[in-house]
Each structure stands twice: as structure tokens, then as C-alpha cells.
Amino acid sequence: AQSVTQLGSHVSVSEGALVLLRCNYSSSVPPYLFWYVQYPNQGLQLLLKYTTGATLVKGINGFEAEFKKSETSFHLTKPSAHMSDAAEYFCAALLYGDDKIIFGKGTRLHILP
Amino acid sequence: EAGVAQSPRYKIIEKRQSVAFWCNPISGHATLYWYQQILGQGPKLLIQFQNNGVVDDSQLPKDRFSAERLKGVDSTLKIQPAKLEDSAVYLCASSLGRGIGTEAFFGQGTRLTVV
Image 1 (cartoon, rainbow over the protein chains, first blue to last red):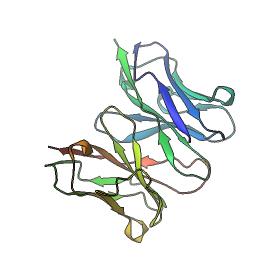
Image 2 (image 1 turned 60 degrees about the vertical axis):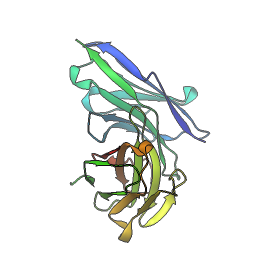
Image 3 (image 1 turned 120 degrees about the vertical axis):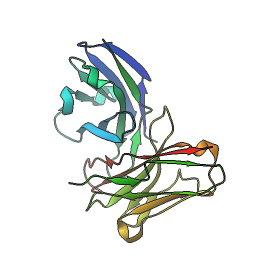
């Protein structure tokens, strides 16, 4: 069964520092992968997605993620953190032909002034 | 383009009462999902519809939860009777449907508190 694992339920970085949120998937076939962001009392908003093609994907708000098949990973990065990036981030996977989107448990990102 | 609409935004009920949530997906989206998000956890899929048919309800507690999607558009999720552990945010999402990398678009959710 496919699953999504996010390493670290809480991550703290200083404003201006690099953001790195980790995501690994387990699936015999590489799935389609997504990162969503959730602000307090809001629904989930898509940051970026990987389907096929280029393995480095750029999303909104300066975020990007790289699909690495050999490592079964899809880590999310941002070169310079901003206070407005403080939120919960979810990695998700969708198997082709399945249509069921599975979420990781989420990582809460804290930005330190 | 209008997003996924959910109502109500908040609901407080006593245990053993019943409650219903409503979702209106993005126009033209064939797939509709209901997720349960317990505080501090990721969303858990409860049920998935493709048009008005159920694709997956393997994690829906069928003794108390039910959902329908009449005419393949709006959907309702019902809990009867509610338990304390049902306190969560219920998220509705929709997507275009079967296809390559079709992401889900989420509503703002309904926060349910069972007391």
C-alpha cells in the first residue's frame, strides 16, 4: 500500500534562512506528488505538483521541490524563509489510475524573527 | 472560477446527536472527496465519488457515517450518532477526475466539535 512520510512534525527556521521540508513516499510505481499548504482555519492550497517531465518543480511563493526516484523523495525547499511562510505543509501522493490522494501527517513550519 | 464551497464553517453538537455537512464542488469536477482532519494530523480520506458513484469508502465508519452525491454535483456527509472522537475538520475537495496528475481543490472545511 502506498504511504507518504513527512520527517519532522515541527520545523523551525530563522527568517531569511533556507527552508527544507522532507517527504518520502512508498510505492512500487512512482506516484504523482503534491505539496499543499494550510493556513489556520483554512483549507489546503496547492503549492506545486510533480506529474511527469522535469524533476525540479517550481511552485508559488518561491517554493520548489525535486522528485528523486532513487531516493523515493520529494522534498520541499525555499531559499529564504519569510514570516508569512509560517503554516502547515502537507505532502501528498496520487497513484496513476487510482485517483486516491494520500496525505502525509504534515509539518508545521515556524519562522523565527 | 468559484472554488469548493462548504457549509457550515463551524458546528458544535452533543454526542449522540446527528449532523450534516454540505459541499458544492467546482463546476465540471467529476471527482469529489471527503476528508477528515483531526487536530495535528494529515487529512484522512473518508469517501471518494466519481460523478455520483462511490469509488472508495474503505475508511468510512459506515455504522455512523453516510454520504451521498445526488446528480453527481453537490454532496452531503452525515454523522449519526456523533461521538466525541468525531471532533475534527471535515474537508471537501474536488478534481477534474481520472487523468494524469489532476490535483484536488479544497474547500475551507467544516470544523465539528462534539461535546
